[in-house]
Length: 95
Image 1: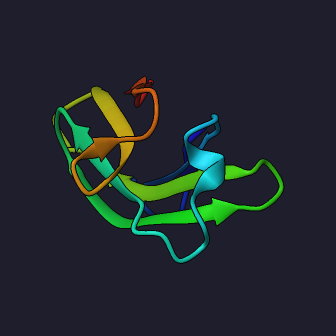
Image 2 (image 1 turned 180 degrees about the horizontal axis):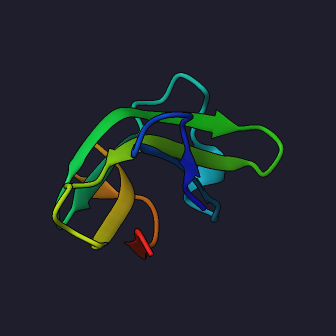
């Protein structure tokens, strides 16, 4: 799930969300991610329409904290105050 960049401890993630609510939003819709990590730093967050699935793809980079072996990740998609997707949970481990 997470790909490591060469010479770095950063990991890139891509998560696809599909569902009835999501397929009605156009490419220009204001769909965004609510994303958190129990430790480390998240950057390069992007949410884009996935025309292949009719859903949306969340991508981001995680830079784990040096002293942590496990990071709990959590994400869902929203538009304004409306939740659009299920909540994605993932426990990433350095080992």
